[in-house]
Amino acid sequence: VKQHAGRDSRLLGYFYLDLWPRPNKFSHAACWPLQSACTLPSGERRPAVTALVCNFPAPKEDGTPPLLEHNEVTTFFHEFGHGVHNLCSMAEIPRFAGTSVERDFVEAPSQMLENWCWEVEPLERLSRHVETGESIPAALVEKLIAAKNANVGLLTCRQLFFGIFDQTIHSRRTSSTEEVLRELHTEGLHGTWSCLITQPVECHLPRLHAWIHSNGFCLRKDTKCCTMSAPK
Image 1 (spheres, rainbow, N blue to C red):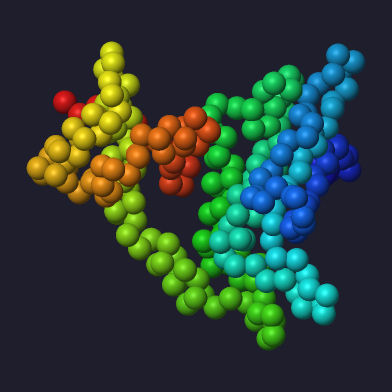
Image 2 (cartoon, one colour; image 1 turned 90 degrees about the vertical axis):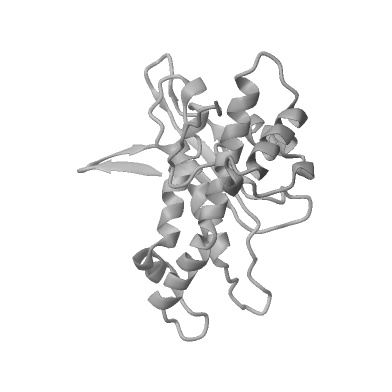
């Protein structure tokens, strides 16, 4: 991958694609930084090396082309965002190159690229009907967007509850996550913020919440995060 500026070009890095499944392969989708970009003591620029690993449908032996579902296209754009992040990094020190940034920005480029999968024009350019060669109809894209936005209010309430739970357990000197969860559920069910109660207290929310944040994920929409205050 090269950056072109007029007649000059500069090597940014190498981008590997590993898109199809095979035995004993990593079964999820991810973008792995194999070498971080940096400036060497000699002043020379070391290029980035990154690999996008997925498990999309592979071409069949009879020549039938593999077809991607919309969620798989979104996954590809998401992971490609991590790849672009690694390749375009201009950090001097490898420790801060690519996705080695503040946790709340790790997913930002991927979230931005995902948005292209929910716009009519990009999907029209990307898609082709396997038999007719026609692009995806705008009406179908609108239905996709409508399905995505269905119950978004309920999902937002769930995120707000996560925020209240998180701020509550971290604003006390000591706290039992199970007791706090039951306390918040009791308050919610009595109408303080009943709209935020979206799941039973026995659902092991604290463990789910800890897994999400211990792995560096910041749950957000359109790259925006909100900070919740602890309930008074």
